[in-house]
Image (cartoon, rainbow, N blue to C red; front, top):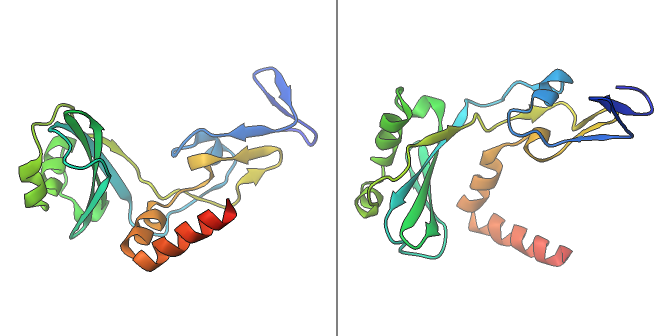
Length: 171
């Protein structure tokens, strides 16, 4: 890093825009990473062979876990489970996914056989001291992310309607 440019791999530029993701190594290297304020929030997702019963994304809540059901093909739905690390049983992703999914018995009955292994992500909360350092600008997930900000809005219809109205007004 220089006062008037950034140099990376022999390339000189006025600025570097870093969009290197949720686990941004550049954010850590620049000393912008902050410790989380909450327990780790994680996610697991898996595709199931079943005809989607709705063209919309569904959100289901159970103690300690949220389930997002997304139609992804004519015979496939995606199931994403978001949870706090301390609310899920330990173990490999497959058994952890099944244990969390069992908190939604009606949903579990509707799902067909899994056609992909469960894949995980997180922790989602990534705090930053600043979104820039000198001539480096963090964008996207590299700039910090808290998944609860999005899902808590869904739990309040008033907040969701207000946000939609604000977004419509901006256009």
